[in-house]
Image (tube, rainbow, N blue to C red; front, side, top):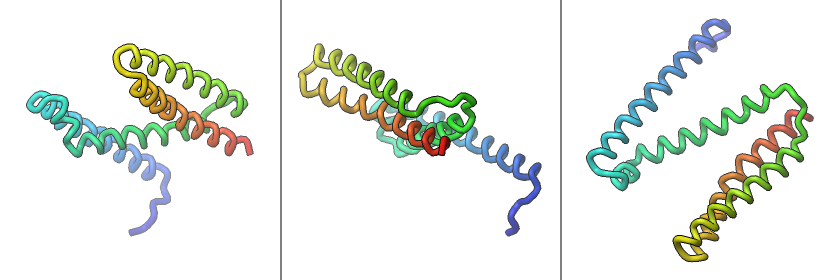
Length: 136
């Protein structure tokens, strides 16, 4: 198979992949929706397609971050953005953890707060590394 060199064909190929990705996601959402209606939330999340859908969303979001950092026009300070993100992540994690401790026990609140903090921290660090790589 030859490598495509024509830019128009490359663009058409990317558009075809985008349409296939959209169709695949609609099919997965349809199957998961059917499982939700027939088996409930537990049945839907037990389906292996649930994991495929979640992983696809996460990978798509991380790939989009790389494009959005390259598209930024202003020279933002990566360190300042990271510090702001860490502070906001900590505040959100403390709020979630505090709300959970009101309804449950302290260990569950700390666990949920920690998970929320790490969930916000990982993309922030990834953006930081993309911005520092772009500046060099």
